Image (cartoon, rainbow, N blue to C red):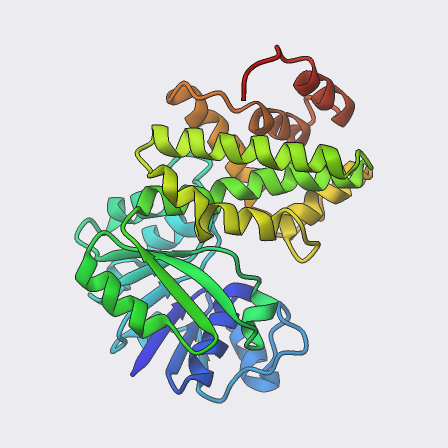
Length: 320
């Protein structure tokens, strides 16, 4: 059996190693021939320092090498999905496409599945999401994720195909809820980092996470997701992980901003673009998301952290 993974960043490379360790041949595609050359030479990714690429992983920059695979995992950053498909949609084989990016398209407000459906309307889709750090997955630490798929037969087959003795997948048919949980928690994780970086205390962080989780659920159900999905791995589970560890780029971004530092150029922080998209969706569906809006304001510089905190604390008192 062979799998193809498109995107040789940290998560794509981590998945490649996991499946290779399980005895699967993996084609790991990168658009950068320079990166592929380096991977083949050193067998180590700059995104996962200290992790050796398994012998069964074949790095390539030739898109035609992904054919004759059981399924394709798309692991390019969420904001690059549309551009990737615009160029390569016709190159993809007719096998299930598993979407691994967690984010909402900033320009269109579309989920990852909605983007794919514009370019490949007949594609069989699934989404892989949930609480898992690439650095831990890559070295075989036990991880449980959510696999969302509308087709129960395809979903069950993919669940068995993509689960290993260290990577356990739970199946859901709630594509909307699973994707929104994975995307929106990045915004709340930035907010949690802001609170921690500014030294506002653990009580404030707990309150923010609780009310942020409520925002995620409100928008998710308004858009057609199932409320119980947000209590699972792709919602609460991912939020707990991402909003509490400096291994999280989103939490670390917020923490740095809370300490007065600036965004590090060249670092992909999915929550930055998703904050903008989430605000647009909140207005479209008439959903109250005050934390998401102040995060977006802090990120774009229209509010200071003190002003954002005051905006939240001065809101009218209400029932929980």
